[in-house]
Length: 422
Ligand SMILES: [Zn+2]
Ligand SMILES: [Zn+2]
Image (cartoon, rainbow, N blue to C red; front, side, top):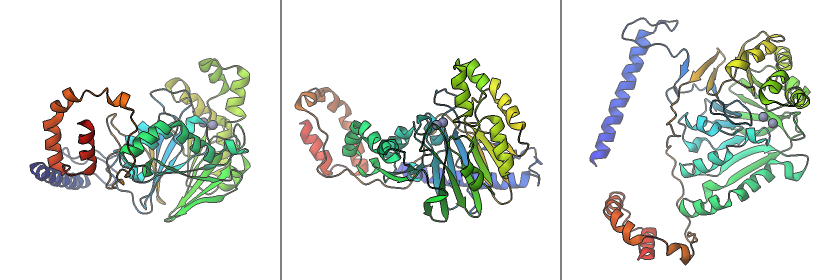
C-alpha cells in the first residue's frame, strides 16, 4: 500500500519533471536548435534517447540494431533493422546474431516486438531468433511470435521448415516454459511466401503494406522488402548482388537500405580469405561499394543507407570512398544503433544513446496463465534430490509475506506445490 502510494507520487513527480523539462527546453532552444539560455538544455541534434520521443502519425523511425557479419564481435551485431510506424506498429527486419541486445536496449515492451520479417535464412540474419522468441515469452509477449519469410527452391530450404525445426531444436526449452508460463506465447506463427514473387504483398494491415521482391544471393530464396506507410516508402534490402527487381521496385523511395560489402582486398588482409573466395563474397553474391553507389545513383532515393560491412576505424572510410566513386547523394554508413526519422519534411540521422543495463521494459499486456493439466515432468529420482528441509524453512517467511501481498494463499497451484513438497 505504502509502496503503491510512493510509486504514484514518484510517477507524478516524474511527469512534472518531464513537463517542466519540456517547457524549459522549448523555451531555451532557439529556432535553429541553438542553446539560448545558460540553464537550458542542448538540442537532441546527435542523440535519440529511446522511449522519450513520441512518433508522429505520419512518421517512420528506423533503428539499426545490427549491421555486421556472421563472425561475432562486441562492437557490431549482425543484421537487424527495427521499423516503427506512426500508427504504433513495429516491424523487425532480420534478427541477426547479437542484435537482440541492441533491440532490447530500446526499452520497447516485447508485446510490440512480435512481427519479424526474414530476408533470408543465413544466421547473420536470424541467429538471435532464440532470444527474441524466449526473451519475449519470459518477459511479457502475450501471443505467439509472428514470422514472415521466403520459401526456398526446396521445401527444406524454406522459412516454414526453418521455424518448425527451430522449435524442435528448442523443444526442451518449449516444454519446460510451456508448463510454467503458458504455451501460447511460445508458439511461432509462420507465414511463408513465394521467394519468386515480384512486388507481392506479404503483409497489409492497419495502413501498412509490405511487399517482397527476389534477391540474388548465395542460392534461391533470399528477398528484399518494401514497406509503405503514410505516403512514405522504405526499402529494406536483404543480402543480394545488384538485381533488376531492386532497380525496378525500389524507385521513388524515401529511404533505401542496401548492403555494401567491404572490398575483397580487405577480406584477404583481415580475414586471411583466399582471394578467390574474397572476390566471390564481396562481388558475386554481395554488392561492392562501387556497385552499391551505382544502384543508388540510378534509383536516387531521398536517402541511402549502406550496411553489412566491416565497420571499424581501419576499414569504414575505404568503403565510403568506394561508394563515392559512383554516388554523391545523401548517405549513411550504418552503425549499430543509428536512427533515422523519416517524414515528408525531412530525414534525420542520429545515434541512439542506450545503456547496457536496459531490458525491454514491461508493457501492459497480460499473458495467459499456465494450462491446467500441464505439469513439470520430474522423475522421483530427481525430486528426491530436493533439499526441502533446509531451503523451505529458510524461505518460508519471505514466501508467506509474498503470498499474502499478492493473495496467492488460496491458489490451486500453490497448494499442489506445498503438498508435493510435504
Ligand atoms: Zn546472407
Ligand atoms: Zn548477411
